[in-house]
Length: 463
Image (cartoon, rainbow, N blue to C red; front, side, top):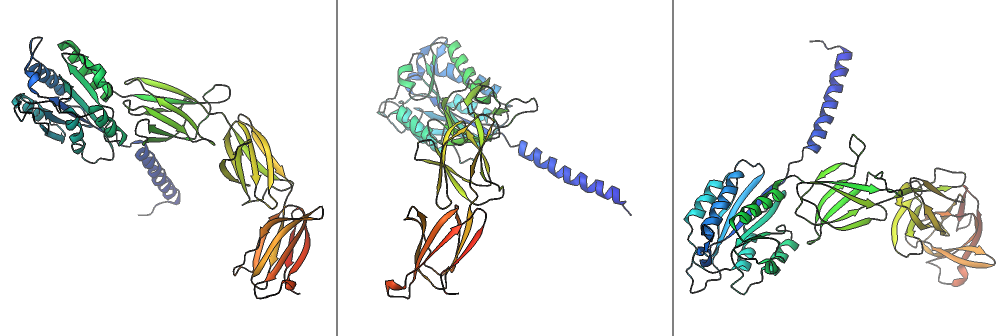
């Protein structure tokens, strides 16, 4: 078969663009995280108490089973059940009475419901110990969000500290902030430090609490980050944003900000159960801490990030490269970044100082960066001094100014026989002694002048 040249070119183009589209689709089609919900269920003796139309235990089992039925077809969802107070009769008290009855798996709703129907409440209430054991219930997973829903009718009875255990789990990033449903009595003061508390003083409130928790857990939540310019408009973009878990300090997401096809800041899908500290990696970075999202809603967060540009230029020359410039906030000591001479870099608006690392160093103070404007710093075009040695030794370079020698640089005393230095226009002197000469009188000194854009060769040995 003979393929025409035009058709062959078209086929090659199609394959290349198809591969590009496939890569875009692959990048955009990142898998959604698996949500793993661990129900920690109270089966202590007190759950046999009468409440509304039945015992607290029977009502809790019935309502939880109804919620489980609604989750049967939910994708990217795994469930597990841990129960406490159901293995040993009270008294005596057994504070280790907790067990993972149903481990995480897909499509295990029927199994969880079956286990709930076979349990008999009989023991005590080791809440802190049960939560600590829950760390083993979540298998290692790189793309999972771990959620605990605690259902209880009482407080800790074994001397543990559920608040401390919950905080430790969250700080380590093992679980998100737990949900707690308190049955029959308001335990808000005792459980708010453990997680998000819901009071269920009657059956209706219990059902509503379960529905709200599941909705917050599973309904999609989005955020739009508006990076605001100096005029309060969301025009800034193309900068990375890191979303940190406020409690654990662990990074949860990195997004390079972009605009959608309507010219608006892009919409991001993130976990609504986390309180975030957002760092926008401008130069210098900006922070917005303790950002809380409304689950199931589109959230808009504005962050002030007005930016302009900074460029360096040598007078009469635009090709000078590899000359580093230290950038600091005006009148501050901390180095923000080091910018090369051939770069144009973006900075937050404000005043900066630059230290150009030629010899002698050039300090430019109070550089004003304005919104969407390029500020160009000009300096005299340096020259180049090539210092050549015939042997290793000890020497220094000095600037000659007003009959004074100002130290600038120590020559390398290793095997390097030639050193090339950027020098500002002016008068200089190099002082040198061979390491093999044991008398100071063998010191050599030579003066020379550097002109803009010129190279001067300085030989530290006889012609």
